[in-house]
Image (cartoon, rainbow, N blue to C red; front, side, top):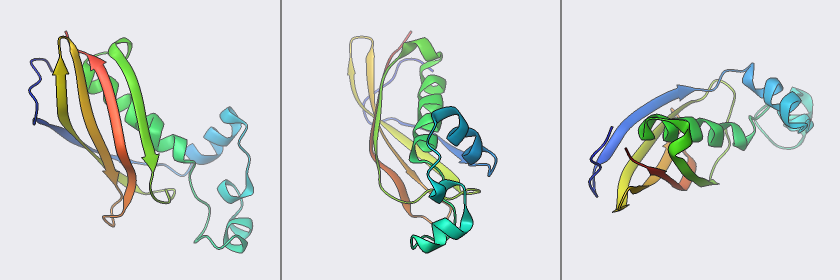
Length: 131
């Protein structure tokens, strides 16, 4: 995509968080907190079950930013606020709206909700260089 214009809503994307991503992320990151890996530990902490790492949703956002930009090497910034619990098997709907275009730099405000309409990511911002 090129020729970004302020106010343009970028294509929404629905992405399901596979249960297998949670232990894989724990292994790769070294974050082996039991709330991500053990149902009993998660429930004893007051959670509805194991929860996915927030960074999984941020990684998905980074991939989406690369898709919007046309290539990963064009992405300059990815940031967000983790606003809610991410559960394995949740489907996230990412939405983005162009906030600014400064020369070749495109700034996009991003959010993500789960299939229940609950905020998972808020105050998201991605910046990338357009072609």
